[in-house]
Amino acid sequence: MTFAKEAPKNCNLCPRLVEYRNKNAAENPDWFNGPAPSFGDENANILVAGLAPGRMGANRTGRPFTGDYAGELLYQTLKKFGLMFGEYKADPLDGIELKNVIISNVVRCAPPENKPTPQEISICSGFLKARLAALPKLHTIICLGKISHDSIIRTLGAKPSQYKFAHAAEHIIGNYRIVDSYHCSRYNTQTNRLTTPMFENVFSIALKN
Image (cartoon, rainbow, N blue to C red; front, side):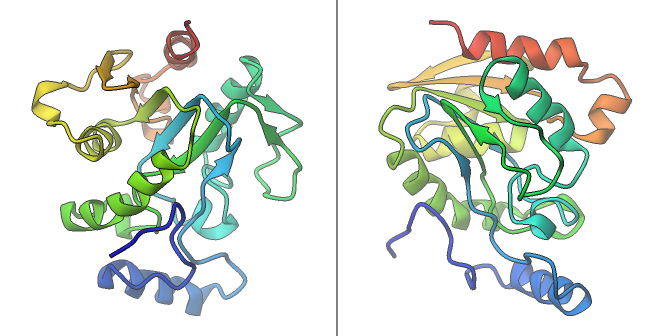
């Protein structure tokens, strides 16, 4: 099967995710309810790789990390480091622009309870691989969370056991540098597992020459 860099709106490769998507569409027909496309600069050097769209986030709005709590810290940090222009208002029509960075998810459809299965992650890796191949200037990937880290490592043809996930850890695989971060979820930030300085440090590392 040939994968495009973005999943089609009616992608049916993962039955459980399709069922969940249809359920959301029946309950909220005005939501996006589909595989959330990547957002950002197609000439980016940096990719921010999340896990999957949140039900109230990208599944609702159609833009990664938009509409749920995780986007607040992410876009605030992007702006601080000169990677975002405009004012983030948790609305895909807010007009923000990203420079030198693109945001995507390793699983493109919202999973129940925010937990994709290993099979769903494996299937969607075809889109992830195509997405990476379509970014000619990409050299750094920020992985938000261990599942994102493991998926990126496997997509690059390596074994996660050889590249251990740890916050602010760096790994080199071929032409890519991987920088790990705890996910900027509400749970992680409210429990102080991830603080704003910790998250900003990840971007400082990623932007090093």
